[in-house]
Image (tube, rainbow, N blue to C red; front, top):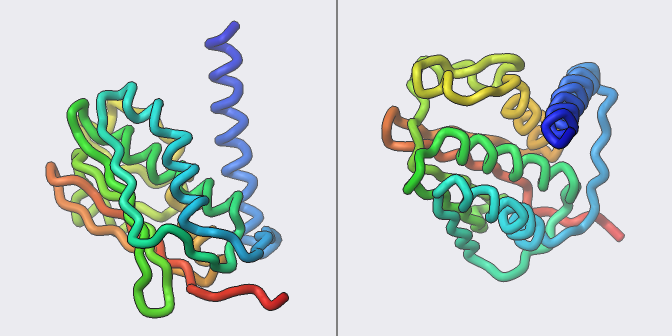
Length: 188
């Protein structure tokens, strides 16, 4: 029953992600931005996944440049992005590897970087990694399952925040995903 329940939860998440990406593409998806502590949101999301990451034999290091930073963002959606990126990082990082989470101020943005020592992504695959239902191919990748929706959803959510996402990766040297969210406050 536990296996059935877990698989049902996974299917429900995939269905919700498909529905949400469709809503975003049609302009019907709304985010709820308000002034939130982005450092707290990112740290909590990462800490909530730390046990799962460590059970896979991977180290998690959270290294923010500041203790607190209030910006306008949707807490639930930013958390969703962090969980998705961390989930991918642990999926493609071997036992003994490392995942690092950085938060820093850069010009008019707050940048959140999730870096891993995993298998990396080829230049060819980087061109379509953010497209819906696209997946990286290769023998190492086939060991994991994925819907090919997660990174598309992350990109859409970041763009709804008027931000950006950047990928730097090299085969066998890991990947670095950086999200930039504008350093702005909601008017009260």
